[in-house]
Length: 116
Image (cartoon, rainbow, N blue to C red; front, side):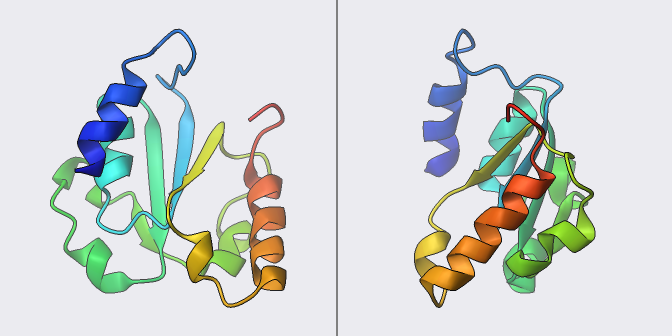
């Protein structure tokens, strides 16, 4: 399970401190990874284009923090320099083109804080 793998990664606090950090999980699906981040004290939000997976999120702690958002609209929803860390896992390979991917990366960069 992805949540278990992320918990192992997050235990290495010397190189990856997330407590009290604002994190966005792009392509969060049912919130498994976002939940793992929240368990280590992150202020986590998630977004996905699939409403059904968000509606079926089993983690009540974070369910209200997950939104249905088209990835090209990230900068319309979140102000510039909002997040300390932005995570995306197994998302970009589903985008329709290299140009679309480039557009999403630019929008992610805008909402990511300097040094994030």
